Image 1 (spheres, rainbow, N blue to C red):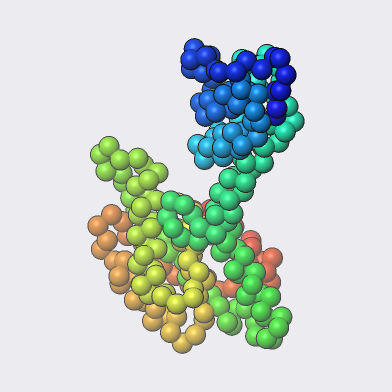
Image 2: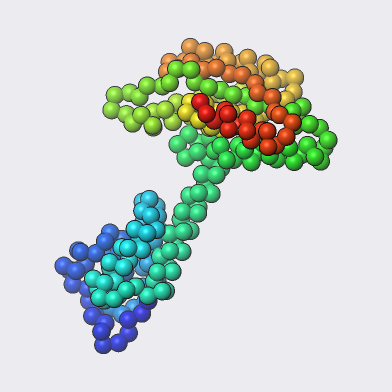
Length: 239
């Protein structure tokens, strides 16, 4: 946005600057000076996205800034710059979520589902049924972890699931995908070989007598089709 012409105010008054929405001080200064606001809008859009502000709220804040400083609606260039910067940050966040659960560090359910689909696609190429090559190892907390005094309940349980995941990773330390699929439950996509039974037994013993909870561990065979595997994962998600 540019504001060349006699209506450009020059320097932004201190009182007006204080009235601007958070992160829009630079936008206001650019409006007042008559310089382009797109770079400042990009910075503001990215900052608001990282703080979890919705796009509607961000656009409303831009409109408030433009009306306070210029008594006009924001121009298209400024709106576009803010929206694109906001979207880029949120897209990066969503892409991150599709692979990893941000609280536990384990694979997200969506990523685990994608890996299972890859197993079925490999079945078509190799001719080996997915049920023969892979299986799901389910780890489910029996006694929910109780939050310590003064500690957030969600954070405490996420930390406990992360601990379960760390234990599972010591047993399944190879290319296996370990995903968090529900409260207190994780699923390992593991190769079905002559070691899987011993590994599950070892994992059970490692989880026995834990200080915060007990956990059940069992093997779920993969069904004949990818669609049926999706339904199985849905059932495992509903703890």
